[in-house]
Image (cartoon, rainbow, N blue to C red; front, side, top):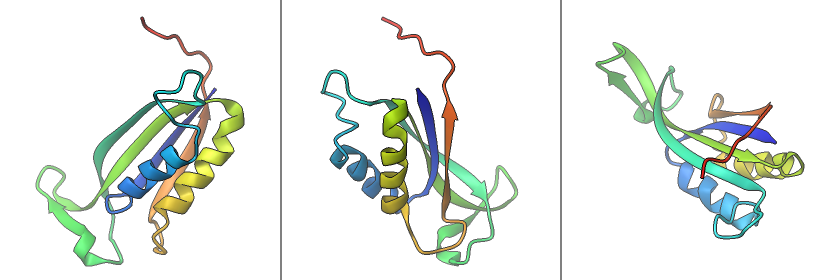
Amino acid sequence: MKEIKAFIRQHRIADVLQALRQSGLCELATPGASCHNITVSQVQRPLASTDPTQQHYSMELAEAVVTEYKLELACADDAADALVDAIAKAAHTGQTEAGWIFVNDIQRAVEVR
């Protein structure tokens, strides 16, 4: 199994989730789907953005930040490349430092019932 973690600009997250659904690999209602445990969390990344309208000042961090979303999911090894491609295409903004996608091996996964 693989874990995919992606950091995506806030105005692209809806398109990314739609692309995952349309990939056919992340249908949560389908038993045996290749994609599991999709989570999305809002995060702040310290970054001098090329687009100042996307940047704001965080009182908690005492510096300028860009609000992004962190998408995490687990998937079958053979689905990882297709899912990364779908995420990258849907998250594309044309800007530098517009996000990152990381893929890690999962050593063990235990379903809690």
